[in-house]
Image (cartoon, rainbow, N blue to C red; front, side, top):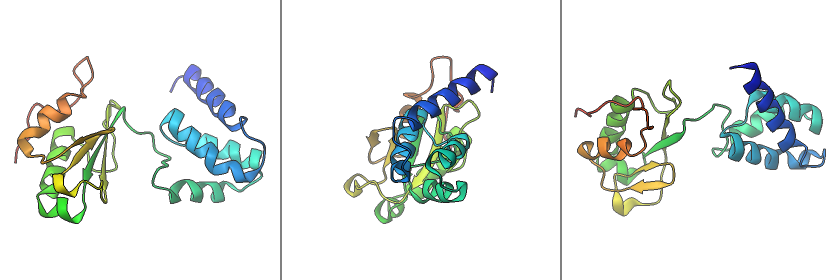
Length: 170
């Protein structure tokens, strides 16, 4: 991380925190804004919030990790989710998840080295009739097969080639 980026991050964090009064009831709202703006809640933000809201870092860390919508780990530019609900699992979701792992070279919970993709396993996306289901960002793909993965993920590959493999082997 360069000094310029670190300064910009610090400025962004300060700007978001100071939009709210120094009342601890706004802690979650600040975290949601940080997540929306930065894609995660940086540890630096938790430190600054602890001072601003007069709460312990431990309390704020627990709040951040309690909610699934918040993360302290930066995510990739694109978030790939495999549904692990019962219907998707029965209809081959686990195999599709393994295909995504092979395709992107990362396990669920990880991000590619180039920061293009994060991969998550989610409990249910509420589209059981389309099982197995994969989501990329806000786009939902139903009846996914291993043959469809290269096309689906290829749509999100960055302009300079990205870091995903050309094929997915069963």
